[in-house]
Amino acid sequence: MLLHPVRDASTGASTVVLPSLRAALAHALPHLIEGVAGPFAVFYLFLLLAGFRGALYAALGWSFVAIVRRLVTRQAVPGTLWLSFGLLAVRTVIALLTKSAFIYFLQPTLGTILVGVVFLVSAGARRPFIQRLAQDFMPFSRELLARHGIQRFFTQISLLWAAVLLTNAAVVLVLLVTTSLRAFVLERTAVSWSLSLLAVGASFYAFRRALRRENIRLRFSLR
Image 1: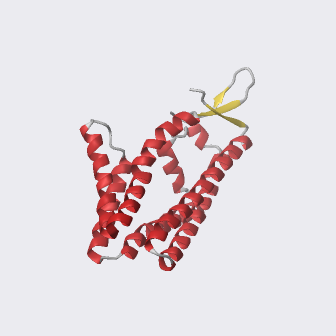
Image 2: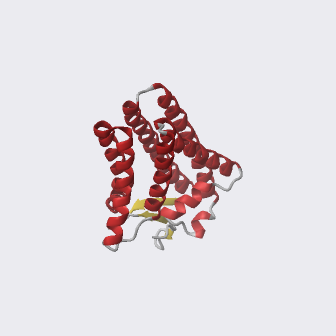
Image 3: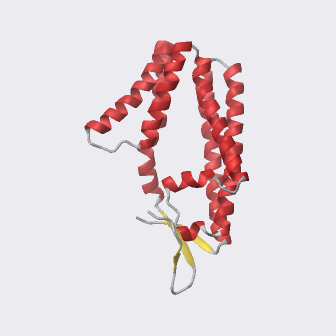
């Protein structure tokens, strides 16, 4: 679905239509369970039952089975699933070689810092990288992207997400060196999800406000 303003001939007003919330959730929920909630639940369960090494194998096994299931049933394997499996495999190998839970959890935190810096630098260069990511999920029309307010929106949320990611990384690093492994897994997840949900809400509000300034209304499809 291409995101572009549609002009109403009778009123002259422009409207951008987003997919319905139900359709968006139906599309996103399986991916969240498969790529985020599932590996976390399996890792924490096996951490309690079989220790750190067992949790490593279980989380990697979950992602491997998810890919195999899609291949066997002739379903497309999302690029994000391949990517998460590859990154998880690298983390697992390094953790097994070093025998360090600290190194295992430090790796994604360093990645978070890197992404935050990329967002920050790209916003300063007025070429927000987050715009490219948004295009993967909801392609914007050239007409919409050409508007000054939309360009400013992407710059602003790049700064927002840079701040969120760097804050998240800082908090996770503090938790990593001050709490037990079992407590860290839960606390890190709570912090990361809380900050992410707040940032998503703020991003949606900023997008709606940017459209309003461009005299464009926003509504959700009923289908």
